[in-house]
Amino acid sequence: MWPSAYEDRLQEWYALRLRCRDLDLDTCMATINNWWWQAPLINYYLHWDDRRGWPGPWDLLADNVFCDLARAVGMLYTVMIIDRDDITGVELAQTEDDNLVLVNQGIYVLNWAPGQLLNIASLPKPPRKFIASDELHHLLGYKNDTDTSTKARW
Image (cartoon, rainbow, N blue to C red; front, side, top):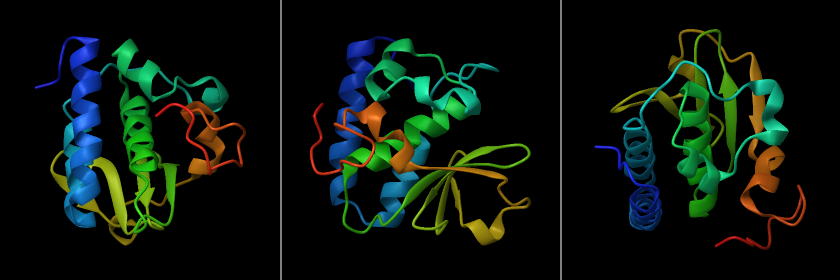
């Protein structure tokens, strides 16, 4: 069940990130996907063209408003923040119908369905837009878009 209070969401998200550091990568990706699928969904909150103004992860949790894209962004933030050596790339992808998180060049595709991970080869329609995680570092508190050495907010 999705926590109703901000403090509880923040605490559970922190526990998720800690838990995912020690899991094998398959289980880690499934755990992140399943946790974010609990978020209450509305039709519209974020838009692809407004990505420079998207909320950071803490604000996203505080707002507690999730469309399909916002849920994918939450998954992306989570994968970016856990900072595992076996995660070599993360990007957001938009297909005709879905907003997906591609991890390790699409070996893992999150936000497809609860309890289900795909790989990019099994998508019914290819992605048409991509946002690399580097474009969103500013929302995580990096000093600039290319500085990945210092995580200023955690």
